[in-house]
Length: 494
Image 1 (cartoon, rainbow, N blue to C red):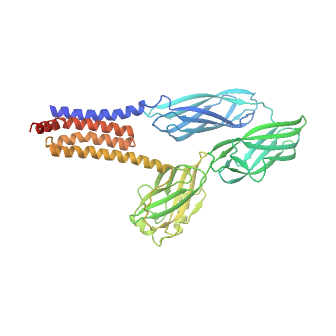
Image 2: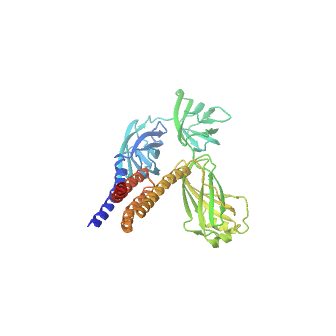
Image 3: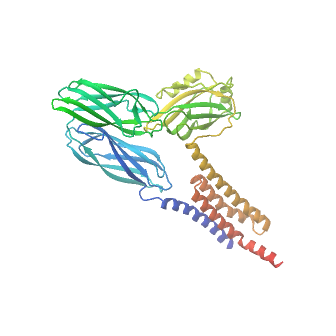
């Protein structure tokens, strides 16, 4: 009877510890995990017939959990035509902010005023339930009268690089305009013209005609990627005299990035691909794939998920090769320097693999997929020559690699505690010679289960480690209290 009670109590404590972890994780989060912190329109002055964008900032209110998938939908009412009414992003860490961007067009008969619209957000809560929030916002519409229209191309500028941009001014009126003076500015002075001032002139612009005004510009290398409004001022003469109009044009700072890649194979047939972000922008959700090709045979998955790779960071993706493929690949590879060939993102993987098969057998064809700073998914395919040297370095960088180091530290602590709580009772039982080994095995089972759940399920969460340690101490204290008391008492009497 005592043995059944002991076993039942042990597993009851284990279940209570595991449930406490789940309860703490769910109860510590607020009822609404996200909130809207800002709304911006481009252009800021929306006229009837305009195509505009609205950028809505979403902030995570969570304390511990990251939202894996968030979707947003806008309801604009009857005066606007939706162009892009849905947007989403993957991965919103606790306390961070990301932006949803939607596009729409104001109808030609839209009168000036403020029009109500609604944003609906859906995401999964930590307990698995689907949460839904609705946030109202207003769309401002200015006067319908508009004489000149301004657009810019290209819309995306990379930080630190010189870019030629063209502002196109179109005369929407029925009469020519003369003495047109055009100027622009960016409020934070992080986007500036090079080699000229920001003001240029056009002698005459006929009715329904367009003209291009060119600038060479550069964005500050340390600028934060995002959408920046450029303030445009145009002064001109028409039949009503001298007039001045102002408007906003949105320019995206950021976009694609570039990678420097090298590869080498160890004596144990491990293919290590070193990837460095040498571009001006960060890369998100980076995935490395080994393409199908002759001479390279991967054991297991041919895809490695790296995560985020900030500019200036590098990391290593490892793949295990089959011995037969290794023998073909390393033939005559020597210490040849990396020779990269970049293909258009839209090229076919099979065709690319065929090109690699026609080249040297000492090269490998890979594909890198990532999300650029504008939210677009990009794909880059390259071939790299292989080195026979064994890689002994470690992954470095300040982005994803740093987070890997922190998770590894917590995981090591959990494994050390698990080893201590397993070895200690075994040694103590051997010394006391009071407990049966079967009872010790039953007691150790929930301890091992708790720590494995903390390490594998909760990603070595600190709270989980603490709760597992408390339950383990309670179990061992209960098991060895009487034997230790008897031994100490016996020694004292002697």
